Amino acid sequence: MKIIAVGMNYAAHNQELHAGMALPKEPVIFLKPDSALLKDGKPFFIPDFSNEIHYETELVVRISRLGKNISERFAHRYYDAVTVGIDFTARDLQRRFREAGNPWELSKGFDNSAVIGTFVPMEYFKDIQNIRFHLDIDGNTVQRGCTCDMLFTVDRIIAYVSRFMTLKMGDLLYTGTPVGVGPVSIGQHLQGYLEGERVLDFYVR
Image (cartoon, rainbow, N blue to C red; front, side, top):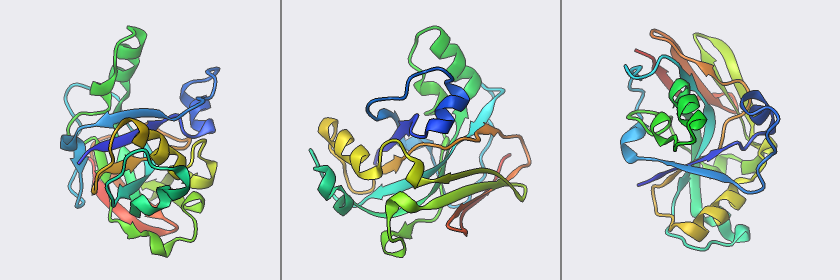
């Protein structure tokens, strides 16, 4: 199982973190190792190597079939469920690595940095490109998104990624975060929602 993630997929978020940078012309892809996965409501422990861990709330798509060089018009056949996930980022490390011109995988791929909630079958949604999701911290909504605002649709991302690597059953696709990312701290309670239904619930320790 591999975790495929998309960066810079919402225009407002790009302005939030990369003001002045041109919008990407193709999906920006990075990977997280399987050891990054955190599920079943287990707590997230802030690592000792960062002083600035940020949440990035995302729609996560579960791949359900083996596929290579998938046509965009057939991409919908290759996933069966979605949920809300958190792409935790060590922002201070990411900033330092980028300033040095170095790869920044360590700021994204550390243990337990890919949180996922309970998956909901696609049959419950009319259109994957019109799903609303949000994140609450301690009962207050801190981030909202809708897949209708993606720069690159889920099907286009799947077609693009499958040109380079084979998609396998169980792979996870983190589709990018909307505007509103921010830091987490010990003791906070995070809850993620799909169309008003809670699918993610865990604490920061």
